[in-house]
Length: 320
Image 1 (cartoon, rainbow, N blue to C red):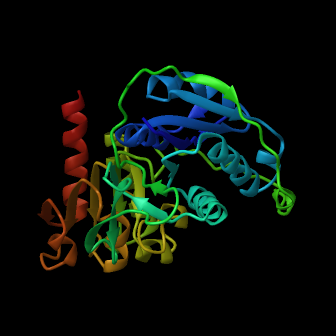
Image 2 (cartoon, rainbow, N blue to C red; image 1 turned 90 degrees about the vertical axis):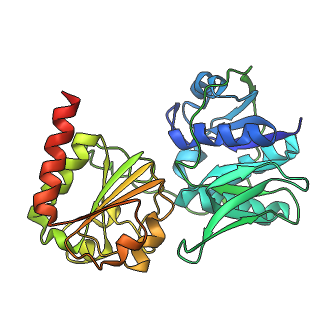
Image 3 (tube, helix red, strand yellow; image 1 turned 180 degrees about the horizontal axis):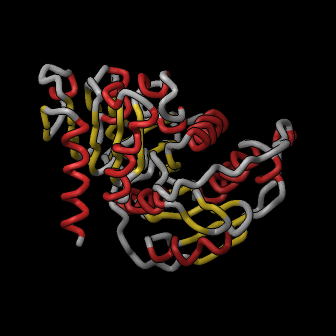
């Protein structure tokens, strides 16, 4: 069976959930070979092997931390040349998409971004995508070279599938451009104790109907009762009620959770583009004609300040 390269997103050896999801998808089309780079790369092997990686290629160097994406592209290209894979899968983060695009240019291959599913095809992997602000679902495949595909978080279930996970050192020679852009400073992101927005299984978002930054505690309380991430519409962010890092939509972050709850959000196309691939969508809005209701699986017509606190209390009561 052909091998499939999977780029590992990890923090000091702790593998992030989107990578484990990629391993599930990779097993549909071949044998996953993981590529882990940077500090703690060898410590990823156990988790990767538990989820299907037959081999783990590792390499650590100061360049991965001190410079931007080019060293990682150099390493992934080295892995590609060593393995000759049937496809290369990368998590669909901002950095992941840049790495994938640069790699595709280097190896002369087509690229598919923001895939939401992946299946084997007679002429190569077939990816499912959302197009035109998520108004259409398309199936596509790369027609030239080795497919390079980025996959959105929450597109597949994490499945245990024990494999060998043999660790092998990857030989990497950095290009002259690898040190062209240096990282001069890092600021740790303030922890909220909530899941990362793009990776969360449940997202609770607030919009214009929240009517003020001081009222977002209603949204946060519901999110905390569910163990969810908090999102916001562009209207709420532009008004200064919530940080831009939490914006969901065409000019914010794209999410695809198992459950998306929209409170006080009318459902403009720009917002829908960022959450329409969610598995189950619930909307709470006092305007029965709000466009969001055309999209949802479940809708509640009512004032969010009446509905959301009751929902929060009910969830807490059921959780005991």
